[in-house]
Image (cartoon, rainbow, N blue to C red; front, top):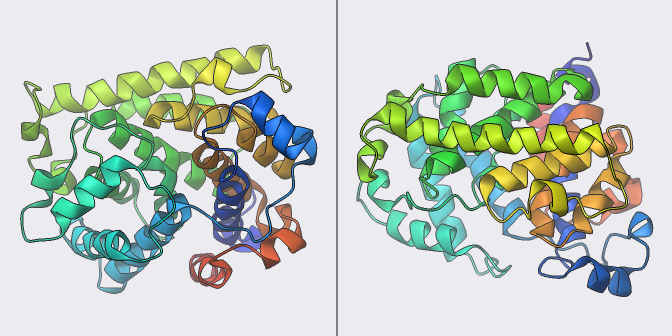
Length: 338
């Protein structure tokens, strides 16, 4: 088993996330024929110049900063994490750089978080957009967390904006996948491990992290609330397994595992792209960016998975040199790889 320390998984994952985001930025909202007409053969797609990212990377960095602040203050708890992450999300909301077509749920929730109401009242409990799991990778990369802290932090950072149980479960699974790959789990066994994890957590409501969030929904109990999310994610993981039984690299992955606009489809299609090419990270990124769906979010998640698996050497040096926010990505990666 490769340790995180030797392969610099955090640096690899954060760089991969931003590179996928930048590669998919110009292709989002386009169908595959339009992308091919614009970019040429998908296996030869080049990183744009300049390599601008979207809100996906901006919010990942916001979460990373909030997580770092919380961990600097002591043992990670829900109370300790919520305040700095909330502040970072609100700062992002007001930033002049927040001009990269951010999702409506993030904007609405961050507007409501900008005040003193309990965060559960700001959470958009009807939204399971992919905006929560596209940014969760730092939770899977930060060292020294228990399984409960990692799970609670992943779900809490989602719930601040996206309070639908599927958004929480997909964020938890995304952080878990990044964590497992960083720790040396072989890609071949990843889906099985994620399914087992989902079954184990299916009725576990983390009230120390989520408080009374479930009461802001129509569910009869906290267990009924959270199991809805895990069940949708289990169904999505099954679509990935089915797709990989008869892999079709030249077909748009969205046709098998979903377009990525909602949380469980973003996770499924990112896993699909990564697992089609587990040892060809740039090809996985290009496949993810050449999709009819939410290309930047699918590619940023695929990049986080590939980078956690292979480390920073997975990425072309010329691409890394020009990625936006490069210095901050490297700084956070170095902190968690140390």
